Amino acid sequence: MMHFLFRLERHPFLTQVITTPKPKNLFHSPHSTITTPPEFEELCKVVSSSMGGLDDLESSLNRFKLSLSPLLVTQVINSCENEAPTRRLLRFFLWSVKNLSSSLEDKDFNNVVRVFAKKKDHTAMRILVSDIRNQGRAMESQTFSVVAEMLVKLGREDEALGIFKNLEKFKCPPDSFSLTAIVNALCAKGHARKAEGVVYHHKDKIAGVEPCIYRSLLYGWSVQENVKEARRVIKEMKSAGIELDLCCYNTFLRCLCGKNVKHNPSGLVPEALNVMMEMRSHRIAPTSVIYNILLSCLGRTRRVKESCQILELMKKAGCAPDWISYYLVARVLYLTGRFGKGNKIVDEMIEQGLTPDRKFYYDLIGVLCGVERVNFALELFERMKRSSLGGYGPVYDVLIPKLCRGGDFEKGRELWDEAVATGVSLSCSSDVLDPSITEVFKPARKAEKVDLKGCTMAKSPVKNKQNTMKGKKYKKMKKKKSSSR
Image 1 (cartoon, rainbow, N blue to C red):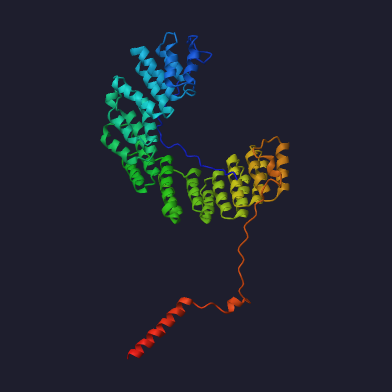
Image 2 (cartoon, rainbow, N blue to C red):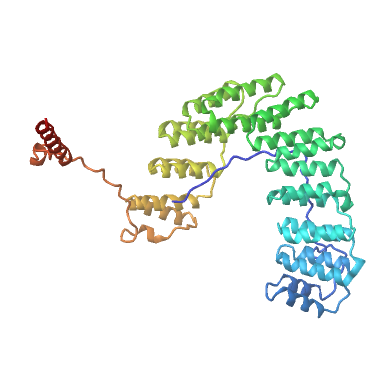
């Protein structure tokens, strides 16, 4: 059976996100005023081709007779960025460096480094970063931020820290921008301790970016679900006069609830409500996102009563539940066998005029099929069709095989004809409708208890042979002792 996965949208937390702008294609634009040589397209085909080795590529490049320029090299790299293997791009660039000598500028090297970082080729990126350092070229702060982010994602955080500590050798200013870049990269993967070490040794560079630094550290500790350290960061933010916003409390609540799910499920509601009370004391009203974090964790621990109570609490507190709130409560109700109550929650959501995403129906129908309640899944599918959301194909692909394997070929055929009549393309095969091909699932029979009443063997139990042997030995020993006296 096909399983549908639903994930809550995580709202962006870091206030300063360092991204690299995508290089513009200078030669495919109809409004571009830059002309390219006639051999340009052929050159791109040679670089993008997967035929032949790297030496063959260089031999083909040597046969080209055209005036090579830094602009042309950049154009080829940007054009072949998505099609060509990274090693062919690297060989082409190194060949260009050898042929152009000192004509290539620092910005050309930085552009290629960002391309390789985007393609997650650590080896190619490291080669060019080393060339930038050895040739005395300057690394741009934007390039460092991309390199640091990629290295940390690859689990090479120490290498990223090594580059940061030696930025002066790369002629890159170790300013607040580069400091924020390395802290963001480390905290995004939960390396909050190392990020705090960087901040401690560069306190003079955080002036003006303290809010972003502290929010990054809070996020880093939250990734580790370290509530104690996350709370310490919040206290430091308050003492430093940094205003706590909704994103800060969202992050802290994720940390708190994530830890309680594993170690203290009964503390989920009271501790989360304490955080919401603290938010109100700072004149920050909890939103549906805050409540949904709690509902999601309650669903993971199958705490049905508390989930329904939180949904009612949202309404009383003046925070209107969104469709994600209703989804989380309905899901835990279905998973725990409370199908009637789950249907009421769905009906209430529709009455409130909320229009859920298709994922709402996809996942709940998948849950109902998983717990062998196809009849309720069909009812939910009817609600989905009444909402005119579209995208019914995946649901048909789940329900038709499920019905047929359960022996209800008639209903499966009915859904098949309905899908074909409405022009829905199906992924499942029509063979599933054939009873001679589809194996019908039969639940295993429970083992019957054997009644021993009236059985002759039950009336005369077998004596324990070992016990009888012990009794005979004991009698013999007793006779020997009496005769010796």
